[in-house]
Image 1 (spheres, rainbow, N blue to C red):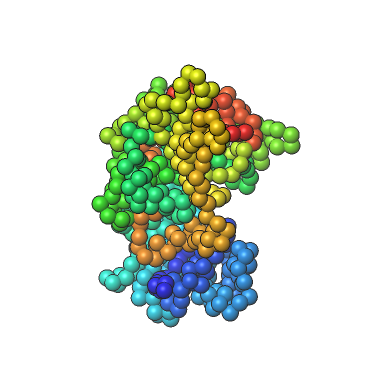
Image 2 (cartoon, rainbow, N blue to C red):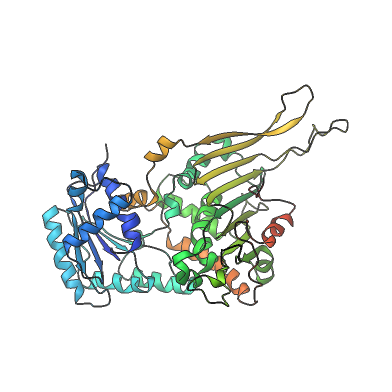
Length: 495
């Protein structure tokens, strides 16, 4: 049976696309499963002038758009817990009105003072909101209650701005009260990395540089920038994808086994892994990272001619790189990463390439055997979830030939329907106070220090853009990056 949680949710940016498309449907899923029942309330805030009735109508539409039966009694009961308050986050006086409503709902729904503040808006307002939540008395002073702050990315655009933001938040909230959302950490197969590694002796005993040749992480997007052009051109693939999503995945792959499966122990091991990540000097950064920007094909415009993109933009839409960890487990084993827009397809996968046998006894001169293929463990994150293990086996004929075969496990359609959406998982974790699948400040800071060095080097030179064709897997330099080490990407077009 699900454990009912008690809390007041306050969404700043409560009429935004993310709230309607992801957050409110996720809360409804938690309501249907019994994690929320009678003792919760939601306040949506934004600059828009709405009343409760219009806000609830918008919530009903968001549930319908997500495929839910918004006209059911269950949906109606859920929506009745929603309230709206127009709010200017820069006007201190507005917080007193918000406090009055929050206190009223606390009594009505017996919320015990538990409060979750979700900031789904521009990061420049995060510090202001956090400060006013405390100074204007919106944070509960009940010693048995909790106050939790949830923030969306981007968390800064470099280390200095991230530190400034974190310092501002830390004046009002302790680190354990701050939940930095990275929706990739809510994905089923990302969370399965820990189960795969630490739940299987067979896997963990081989999870080191003695047996693994390299690890590849690919986050491929099929579409271009679309309506996010204004944001994206000030961010680029390095900041938008590598600093957060990819670095979080890599830290899970590289970390040591925690003492216990708790948020404190897991975060500690992720931080230790990121501390050992080699921060490149100028020459190594230029050698080990490549960038790209998509060109045009048929009726698809190149990046520089997308709406709201400057015609001379040098923003990268593709990044590939090699990461090295200077520690006992991973010394000498590279982690290759790549991500980009307008690539061949939309998918996320991790490929763990094991070393080949030191001696290939099947490659005897009188036989036309091809060299043994490497064993590869693939973690499929999306669109399909599952695992694949590539092994070598004998062909089914009279000669002694070997061929690679695959042992596959994919989550079937019925199980996929039962799988919680990332935001549903993460909101539930916030209610529990479990920070396992959220980025801690030390993780964020080490990731920025690594990424900042790549950015500094790129800013020293003018890129030759565009340099890759839409629906490919990026520029030729990404292939050259890995081929220079006498390796190749496991996922290749026409492979």
